[in-house]
Image (tube, rainbow, N blue to C red; front, side):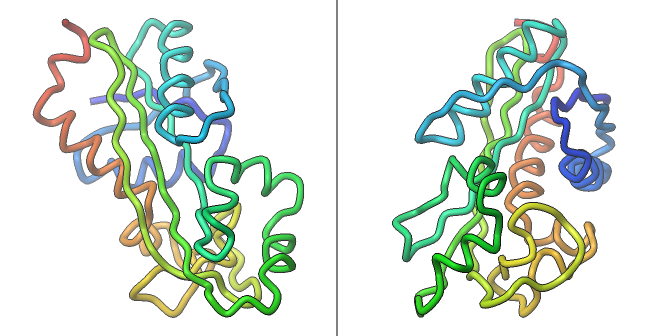
Length: 190
């Protein structure tokens, strides 16, 4: 089965391909624009972008949106993570976190599939903590400062395969894959 994935982020595309490969699902990049609305919920952001991409392509399409939620900062940056990363980056987050002992955080991913039958959203959360300094050269975004529970290394210190064992994105994509294996016929009917 082939699935369109609307993203301009080559790292997300690689992670999606690795996560869905065991299910026999091939991921192809989609040229449809990924329009993001500002919302308090990742599910809303992903669902809207998937609906727009589906209207453009006329084919089932997947969109993923993720956020880093830091406990000591009341969930900031949350659904605004992309904007915060572009403006202050992980160095800005570390600056804000100077002197903060509570380093608990979680990454959450919302994967939305838009198809003829509507939109389905799959979410997954991975808990961890914010490192005191950036570590690693892999990954992207906030990966150099996030250490998932059960590990001593940041996402940026892991290979794609290892990151996908922990990852919020891979977890949500696995939920999508399991649903697709049961419901694939509904992509083109209903």
